[in-house]
Image 1 (spheres, helix red, strand yellow):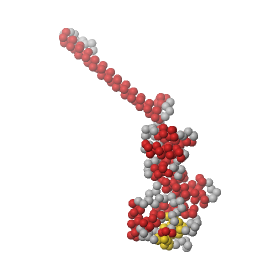
Image 2 (image 1 turned 135 degrees about the vertical axis):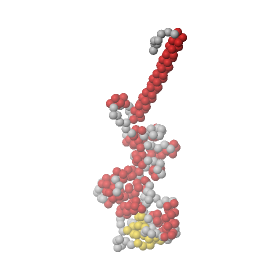
Image 3 (image 1 turned 90 degrees about the vertical axis):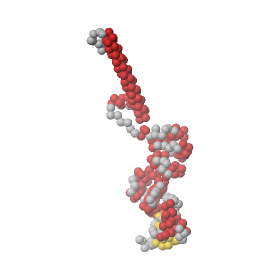
Image 4 (image 1 turned 180 degrees about the vertical axis):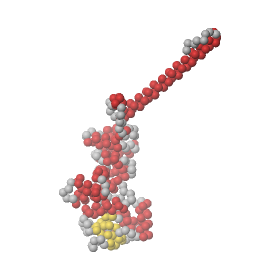
Length: 310
């Protein structure tokens, strides 16, 4: 520990929440248990803070412990003051919360990555944002691609981001939707609230493509989301042809759905034809049996020769 860094008791009212704190302090069952623990044992792990630009203690890590202490009626708590810059404090805020928190929402992770990347960019003066993202990826042990995906979530309107946090919108679909303008995102949210329909990954990619081509309208969004659930997802799968004859028959179809439908129609026609053949065969057998019985009856009644026209 630095000589200037020491744990000291500070009044709870003097501690400020981290500016732009990216993690929620939820008043849930876990907070209730933490509050009871603080009432019984006090704050066992000191709150981590740094002196901000106004020389005031600003909490880096320990917002939940501070809230629990206030709910428990404690007037002061142990605090370890770090003498570091805001950029370093931001990186430490992300590191410590990722290490300590059991449950982290996608929105929390997204905005924490954004704050950490901005701080990394300031520290790495002159470096491009891509290099800074790679450096951040190494720092936190995530892939640069995954960090980029989470950063895209910060482009979602608040209502859609809440649905992602609630697990009602898939992560990959949300990433694709993040490329749409605000009005288009609002249309998607309104459709979901009215009908419960949401874009599959395939439909979300198509919406992204239409946006890039400047062809996306509210009517087109409603049309794509009005398709029966799962229909838009069928084209995510490839239909591989191992037979040149099969390809010659189905290769002209414009989509996987058309190919599947044609195959199904072919199978239905084949089944119908086989059923017709079977019915015709049974009818022929019945006719032959009737003919034989008639000949036998004729022989019995006429007492004629031994040969039958079989």
